[in-house]
Amino acid sequence: MPADREPVLAVTGLSKRFGGLQAVRGVTFDLGPGEVLGLIGPNGAGKTTAFNLISGFLVPDAGDIRLDGHRLVGKKPHEVCRLGLGRTFQIVRPFPRMSVLDNVKIGALGRLPAIGAARERARAIVVEVGLETKMHAPAGGLTLAERKRLELARALATGPRLLLLDEVMAGLNPTETAAIVDLIRAINRSGVAILLIEHNMRAVMSLSHRIVALSFGEKIAEGPPAEVASHPKVVEAYLGEAYVHAPPA
Amino acid sequence: MSRRAQGVAGAAVLALLVLLPLFLGSYAITLFIFIFFYAFLGQAWNVVGGYAGQLSAGHAAFVGVGAYTSAVLSMQVGLTPWVGMFVGGAVSAALGAVIGYLGFRFGLRGFYFVLLTVAFAEICRVVALNTDAVGGALGLYITFTGNPRQFQFQDNRAYYYVALAMMLLATGVAAWIERHRFGAYLAAIRDDEAASEALGVDAFKYKMLAMTISSFLTGLGGTFYAFYLFSLQPNAVFGIPLSVEIIIRPIVGGAGTLLGPILGSFILSPLAELSRAYLQGSGWSGAHLILYGVLLVAVVLFLPQGAYPYLARRLGWTDHAR
Image (cartoon, rainbow over all chains, first blue to last red; front, side, top):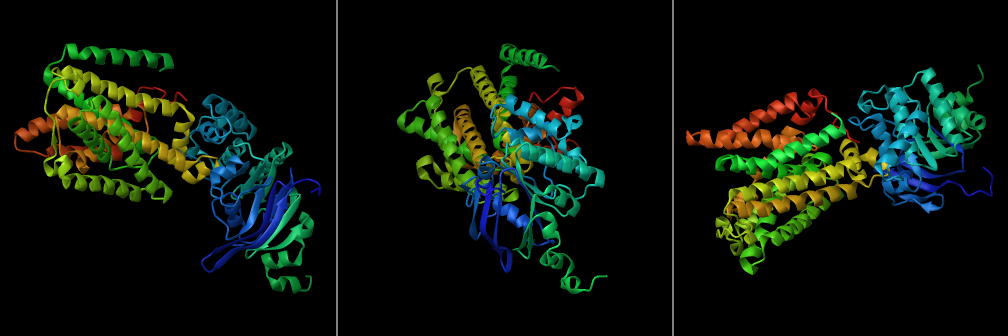
């Protein structure tokens, strides 16, 4: 990220404790305009908690979060959304009784209060994510791959500067994954910065400009994908200490 | 059915309902008054219970507050119920806002919200029962004057038209909501509140709005109740049975649909009235409640979305003008 540009997202000293568990501890990172940042780490590393803190679903114990300079701490999810942050959920949550188009329309209504205008915008986005054949189908009947696309489309319809994508590839087959990688790349090219939680390493390596690795709530590495992937602490977090010190096979 | 055809059909039904009293006997008119009045209450409830999916089971509280407000204002200060009606609606809306705030701000969902609303209706009932200024357990009796200024009419048909107008008013409000962002947001909140908030929906604000509008409309109904029956007792206007009467029609007809509460009332009100008239006469008082129970079980089992969506599908109507 060029240093002269203001970051889209700046997270400083973010911490959150659940009872005896320190889920996120003093995490600091930022994200430049148009950047794709991958957030990786083993299960329980605090990635989804970090997402929930940034998007306003949880209130941090300490730390600062800024979106385009606006302080997000203490803001409710709908306010965070209005400021330009769209998110998806790890477990997809479509409005099951609504059609695909109506689902996406809900996202569009924030910036386009008139139903007709919101519907037109939603229609364009449904086409953009490749769900046009399911436009009027109830969302409850979609396949998982389609639901992931719908989740993406809805977040996109809110007109975000930054998208938080929580495991949008989990459960997809290789063909579906490749298609959604292309889609995310296209969204990014249109000028939307992306923060990505992903377990699919091949996808996260190819999509991300930079990667932040978390383990037990702490940031253990940050940098270009290849560098982070071979970082000893990252290898240790994923594969255990013994592996790091083991002689090469 | 096209939108145009729907409009024509709607206008025809409306013309029929306007002309109907010319051909009906007094008992049939009374029956229609009940149908319209309960359709009105059901539609008012539908705003928060159907569209927003927040199950209030204490809507009798708003009928009672609206009824007592306009009755007391009429008897003590001589305020015409035509104005008192809106004062009652406003007081009910204020109560609805308090209940809504407690429920929505503190995250009482599902059963807990049901219990909160029932509790408030019961509190109102007990307060009215023990307040001598509003007649305590005996309640209030309104002297019949037959003066239209006092919301009283010699001719039953006048009540028919007032009840019809109220049903159309509430339905107009619901139709407006359905066709605007407000309605789309309520549907999103009903389906998945967290997801709706992630998409920029201020769920608290819209639930509060729905609750306030719903309780305001229901409060208007209180005045009709008081000045049509000339009397109000705490157990009748604040009681759980009235809350059940309000809820059951939209649920049977189709909660969250525009015509559900009306269809529900056309099914249930005559059934309730006839079973009351005939079964009570032969010593089976309360038997209509058993009928309600059976019908409710049947609807939950076979038509979980209610009768209207089923009917619309069977007739090939498109319910989605959106």
